[in-house]
Amino acid sequence: MKLYHYAPMDNSVLQDGLLSISKNPINLKSYAKRAGSSKKEDIYAFLEKTFKGRSRAISCLTEPIKWKGNDAVLKQIVDRSMLFSFELDDLVRDGLLEEIWCKIKCGANGVNEKFKKIRPNEIDASPLSWEKCDSAKGLLFGAVRHYLLVVKGGVIPPSYLIKENKS
Image (cartoon, rainbow, N blue to C red; front, side, top):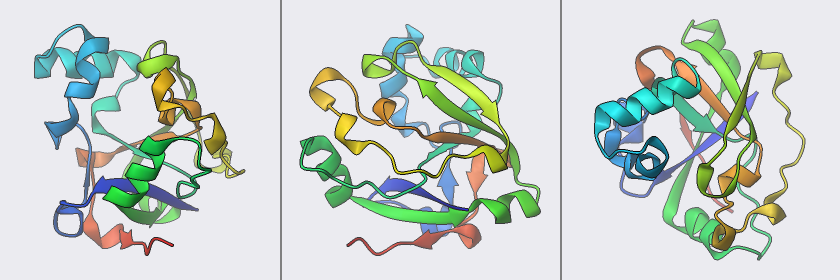
């Protein structure tokens, strides 16, 4: 199964791989409010409290963003990011995948997140409801089903990644 991940244009993904939060703490700011602290150790503790391994997890989607003209932030992500894909089966085969968690519920701005541990064959590849995204209401990726892959070492190595052409 092919999965997708967006990275900023200025990235080292093809050299360093896809990095989890514990390997690339640049995005900790988005978790500080939920963690109640801006300290790296407190944010990691918050993440690990939601599920073991979350600080080593990499978020992914089952399809590229399909912008429906509804949310300018989604369009900015598509326009200002690089899209990478990888085959989940390759990670499983090579023993890199530890666990998969599906975000099954999320309130505005990421509060009240709920996750469910699943097996690879339980990933739902049905179309995502991009029309539900509304950044003005704090609902972006929390409004669409996505998965967090806990990977060994917190990195999906570059040899597993493909840079996708955006249409």
